[in-house]
Length: 408
Image 1: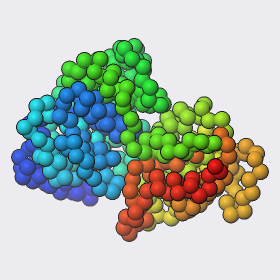
Image 2: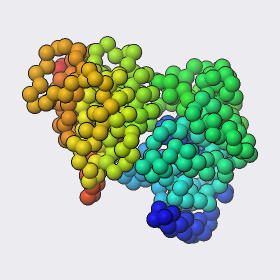
Image 3: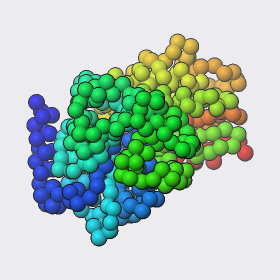
Image 4: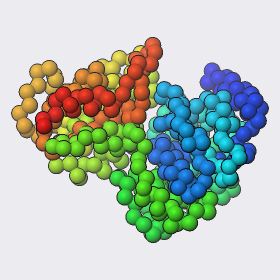
């Protein structure tokens, strides 16, 4: 009941913002991208393809907004900004140009809280829906139902044919439904392309197919799509290899069980040494996912270092305890202060509440052929400890650690 009242308040703000800015989305093509994982990469792919194909493309995503080719910050830990900020961004788009297109990353919270109310979505994309945000939505079915609010209002719906959510989506009478996926029963699949997708990981094949489906519906020739995709670089904090020498270091934003599975399973075959995984889980958020994240990491990693990831006012130690409940039995906890590396490929884990200290420790124990991967923070520029945001850069901390500890 309390959340419902809050949502009505959000709706009032959305109404006011739309009238204040004159319902600006009605004067352009708007594409919304929702889903549990892959939203940011898919938004960036669509933006890149459209931009390279002569469109005046703008986008709003968790890594920031690009309006009229100028970058803007959307705030700390923000994917879908407030309705007022959204409408202000849309109003800024230069209407003197032809082919105005806006791509927006849309979260389930934003949909439930009416933050996107009033935005005219021409195309809606769903990447996948896995069990996430159940602290808010309570059940998977409610989560799917919230996501479909975006899809039902769009002229064209583009859905992942291979995803579990499709069995729910297939029962809905959409205005126009286009499917994509790796299976051939999807309308847009690998066999429909005349080029190879060279992005790392199977999950990025899905992201690319979704973007291709959008581009085809807009009318972009496949040759232009191919040329654009060939020059695409993943967004900041997405499988970003910041160091590669005797060992490698990757920064990724993965923070859900599904993103862990997709990421770690894709990199495991190429790692000759150990995978050293540094991660935590957000405080005051869905606790049910924590042991699942631990379970998946322990299947693919050799060394796990549990640490802080926006704990808010929840104990980092309690969060780590929730995660380790999912570890496979062969994993052994070792006090990092007493650890003497002996070169054995044993399954071990450490708990280091300070994330900077955790990253420094990871680099200090790395061996030739190992891969360090730190997940959960990615591009973010702050850490939340419950009172106020504190400056944080995963890149800065990791690079400093490499410079200090890495053997030349």
